[in-house]
Length: 343
Image: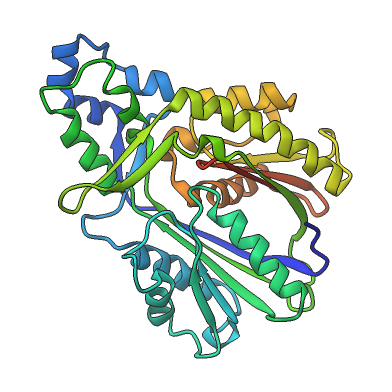
């Protein structure tokens, strides 16, 4: 995919105040750890994640997304009537029906001309939404889009802790549960527009996508009893197949944009954990010193992770005009999408 007129006009993250450390999670799991003889510190050692953030109990994904959208409109000279398309691109949704985007649209007071819909593709939602909104902007259907994501992993963490404290679990049966404890909460709102509306904003240049659906059974998340969620993940196989797909996608991405590994000055990836980070950069032969990571203190925030990390990287590294940034997205299913930005 190639974009000709697409700009990233704004990117505004919103993080919860409550912090849940890996030490606190292990403290809650002390009966399990004692019964199975698990070493203390295992969770952070395996993942590199020391803490994650949590929304208050009962927070809806639409509420988190709308708060990020409100912050975006407050800090940028764009009004509710200037938005032609609203995409809610989270893993988390309020309900199966109606679209969570409808709830966000109402809370933001957007115009009746604004199209709304949900886009769900695991952790790849933000980049998928950018590709759709970008195509609509390039084709002249719309002039400006808002993409929002409000991820709430609290019910998943709570449900996983309840499940792991059941007496029947063994070292073998807990393996597919531990990935759920890496999840965090957060929200992001982004504005994409035609270059005529924001000529000095970063350019979204284009990218490349690939799919390996043979791995579609490696991570399954769904509702459990009550208000909790459950997720089972074959972390080792998902890591292996995901990185293999990333290698294929990277080649297509470079061919599409006529880049090689020396072109990007910065790399931003979906945030899974330390093992994923090391293997990804080793496999693609990319310089890890050009990476910026956030998983250590925020965990895996689903669709929010990549745009949130892009924002944090820009703050930490002070991108210069003309810098090239490679956005490397991977989501369960398995899907991969990489996109290039010129700052």
